[in-house]
Image (cartoon, rainbow, N blue to C red; front, side, top):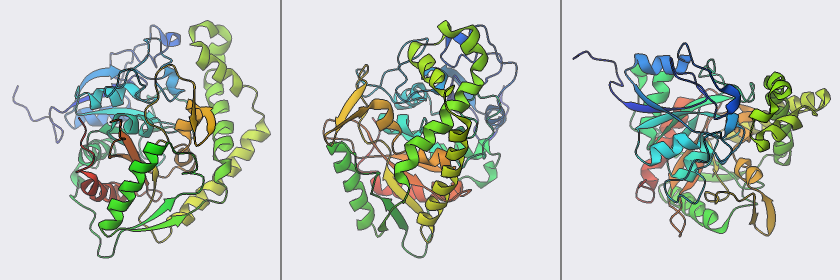
Amino acid sequence: AGHHRGPLHGIPVSVKDLIDLKTFPTTAASRVRAGHRATTDAPVLARLREAGVIFIGKCNLHEFAFGTTSEDSAFGPTKNPHDTSRSPGGSSGGSAAAVAAGMCLASIGTDTGGSIRIPAAACGIVGLKPTFGELSCRGVVPLGRTLDHVGPLARCVNDAWLLYAAMVNRTSQIPPTTFHQTKPIRLGLLRKYFMDQLEHDVRTSFEKAVKKLQEAGTVIEEVSLPHASDISPVYLHTVLPEAAAYHARTLETRPEAYTPAIRERLEMGRYILGEDYIRAMKGRETLRAEVDTALRGRHGLILPTLPIPAPPLGVETIQVEGVTDSVRSLTLRLSQLFNLTGHPAISLPIAPTPSGLPCGLQLVGGYNQTNDLLALSLSCEKIFSNAATPT
């Protein structure tokens, strides 16, 4: 009609089907929510709509966002556009696949243990988890209320920043073109624990990316977290009971409506003791303080996003560095920490593996410094651009 819709006028964006979009069902990829239809937009989508975004569709996911491969879904598994025999990651797998395949400029996903960053790495795109609480989770089906984040998946940092700025209602501030810094960029490399279990090709791609940064003048110093080995148990004793609490009624009344793997995972959460949950909360405080210490005097932390390339569909365990582990544990290993601590984190595509599979590098910023992290990411993206152009 000739009307200007806003700063994101006409931009086509898809939405993870965990987020309310007015008049459409929010299925969470589950038969449990059959018949649901949203009456209003979730606040993050309302702001995007006000900025001029056109929502073009809802995306498949791992049922109730409780998985990292997007296989367990009432609608069947999502496939990776780079290799349809492989997972696109999860739980925002449909969002990442849609962006990587060119179906939309960007997608809005959620991240409770890595569910934006994991599929971004598996599909060779950018995925941003802002600081905890920056973006409202109202109108989003919860998984872990103290861990849930909303954020964008896009083909480049600039596009992710445009979406993020609109969602936090700061479109007047978007975006600078580079990280303006008179002194060299300083990054802390999380090596111990975080690089103990890396598939060979992923390690090679990551080390090449680190070398590129150093050649460009970035100062990279190894840092460590004394309690890194506690990350997984602290995460499990947080997410399992929080998820079970939300699903308590339907687990009693409609257990058959869940896919078996998700029902089993939710049932596990009912057996976490209250003292274990409280202990996990204290563990989170310790880990948050250690991440803050590692960031002190530095612009960010750097580590891989995924320790393995996108896993084949149907595979439950993978051997890495002589150790066999579950796909779920491996894919969460490097991302779940920053849901526990709330620090902003982003996955950037770097040089693919020799077999052509995407690979991701993760940058972590200071608490409530998402804009600084995005500016830093723009500079790093320019350094990597010759090695990682999505296809």
